[in-house]
Length: 219
Length: 219
DNA sequence: CAGGTAAGGTAATGTACCGTACCAGTCAAG
DNA sequence: CTTGACTGGTACGGTACATTACCTTACCTG
Image (cartoon, rainbow over the protein chains, first blue to last red):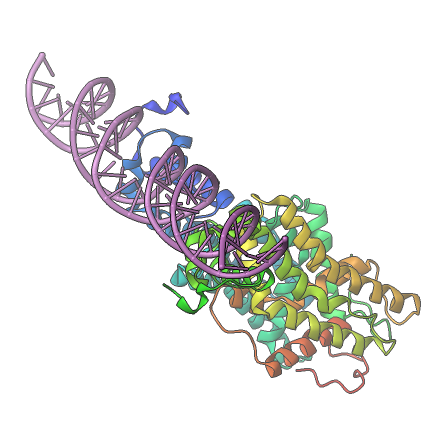
């Protein structure tokens, strides 16, 4: 009834992907507990047997959805080690990628739904954190550690500083998007936000006697 | 059966408070959709009529809980205008308060539950944001604007910078606490985090030719 | 102390939904 | 064409839950 065009058979992979896509729409909008298997299956037609055959039960579908969404969204972070340009450019590139990831619909949905379910799915919450924000911060800390060892920056605890920068990039804007109070930023907005965050991270806000950074317009 | 000592009547205020406390335990742990009125009433004894008489329905109880929790947790932000000491001390004091608020069990619970329900309760989400993170950022922007007008700092967009600082203070640690991956920080930890975030915000991480801030040990 | 009112308790109503069973139609192989 | 595995559609068992109807009890007023 919903999509009569889909009455034919489907290769297993496509079916699995279709289920996950529909599950994303429903779970990420309504949350795990308020979502029904029926609502998911309505979007793609077919019967619930497909879901139960493929994922076992509702929990299995949810964990698969969270895991795969987080994995695919976060894959962009580990493509290569950042080229050995200067720290400012490395951080800018890192920030751009992280911002794009955080604002992607998939990850917004993951955030929205995993907060409430974290206590019910502790391993899932840990996996999400470790592969996502935790790893981002870890990678960043490595970069900072290198720069520190070259004497380029002064910083006591690189892990803490990395957390701070990640937090800056995920500031109130991210929260507003998750809460549905505003749409994700345009590329230009995102770029400006990344630039201003990185600029503050590198130079702070005191206007005293610091040298301007090479070719950076602060916001 | 649960608490037989409570078989007598109760002043309305106490009962209302008891309901909200029990609702906080249940809603903040399980989320709105997965929580049942029965589970709430079991914690305090009595019957569901108490809840329906006082709050109308489940939605009414939830919105009252979120609103009052956010209000009381965030009241500490608007007590007085910060004394006109130097910017560093003002920000430190601001950061301490904000950190304490963010890590309070009440606000952790609000965060946990409102993310998923934001799309179902848009006005509630907006009220929460405006009274909470939005106002924190707004107050901070005022402080920065003053310092800017005194020529103390150099900054283009004070609102953006304020968002960044608020984000720094609410970084991966906050996320880990919400996800239940670690307990809230001890006062000493919190103080160290605030200090390092503010230090970066003020001075950045470049170790060049900046003067050290007055009496600040960065972390 | 009697009687009334409103709150508190109990049980019922109706619904939603997870997970499974059943049947009929469909595709692929032989 | 026949067979058989699989799938779509639907219905069902069992349960949980929001909300309400109805009864019971406590408190207040005169």
